[in-house]
Image (cartoon, rainbow, N blue to C red; front, side):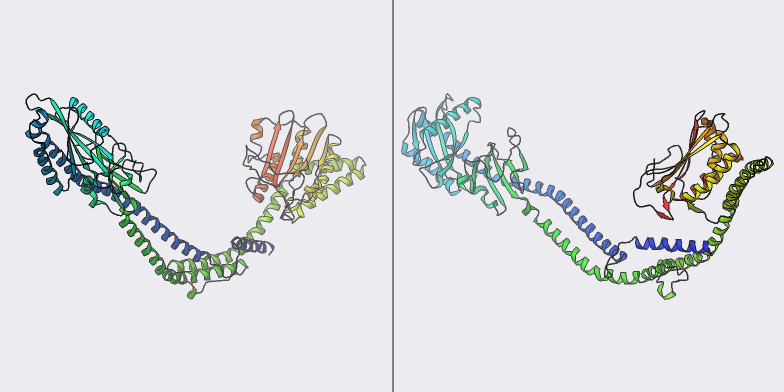
Length: 629
């Protein structure tokens, strides 16, 4: 019954350990399955949220390209109006410079100034009805000859414009109209506060030589009116030069200054192309620019990115709103599912608690099983517990048989030669009349036999094992006299440790047997110590904390590497059976990482080290102790 009770207690303890390994909490704490279902629901919501977010990002990426293409197309259409306005102004200026009356008036002084003035004012009035507001100034090679309006253009500005026109005439006589500006007048507050100018040479029809210049000053409003209807709350338009200086825009105070909303960069200025970009200073804005045909100016559009992606943002908002509605609606479904699934699981858990308390007759009733896989699990549990109940008795019987077999096997380890030689020595002492020595040998021998043959304890203290070993050593000393000496180095903190019984005698017997093959006195040292770092790299030992080590070291004949590698092999040599038996018992009781390690050098001696975990009456040694070295 003792073996049955041991197995039953071990099973119960194991189940309790698994149960108690779970974190403790109040009775109202959610169970693992409920927390698992809620986590899964939360995970689904998060995954859908991430999916919506990724789809939004992807949509913005795809739609963003389409928006860029759309805005560049819109800008390309918008640019035609200011380009058409400038082209119309150039045509009006060309009509004036190529008019024969104007040419004769400049070249030969022929013609009436009033007649020239009437012609030019007709041209100005005709353009004014189309929205083109400008003034005309005519210069000969020396001075101003005509001004359609006052105040007149400042002379320094006029001379600079004429100079640029002369240089342009030299470079490209065919395209000799010069466009410049902007001009900012402090004297005017109306249309011409900000203005631009066009210049074109007046040539002699016969010689083709330049005899004067016509200068057109047109208002910035002319350009602004050509694109102002495109300006919206989140979208701004203006005209800039290649350096990003504002030439025309809604805010007239910004004209002549760098564009305020973006540190814009016009790419490929020389190519006078188009492009777009996002400002580092204003990352929420994107700008587009397109060259105005026939000029070195650019129409610039600045748009708010959030405004461009507003439809996608609204779609994202509604997606997350639907996700929230889904989560709220799915919670009741989850609650119902939890009740249907968790009721059978709770039944299984309660029955497992009963089994943990040793009630192996516990079974799950039919009404508690649930359906589907849960019912199969319940049936498997009932089968497992029934099987476990029947196997506990079988294991108890097997344990008792195993114990008896171990005792039988240990009894066979008493070397018949040792028994024969011991009895012969006792007989020799009796014949010699040394009855006291013979009596002592018989007492020691009987104690060894009693301990080996009648002990029912599988695990004893190291102190008890040492006492049995002392009887054996005394018996061998009586036989071999002073041929060997034994020294013990076993600190008190190791003697209380629990070890398998009869594990030192086979080791010491081997030490005496091989050491006596030398003619000199043999020295055997038996040590025990606690070593937290012991390990055997050439065997299957591993580093283990709180390890008890017992060393039996002699200065006998030793072994070479070939013999050392076969010591623990399964052979029939009786001297090796003892070592192999001890090694297998240690592994059987404590695991493969424990056992025997043998260190030997031929002609020097041998050290056998036994390694096992520290136990004191079945309880691990928790406090730190000295190693005992």
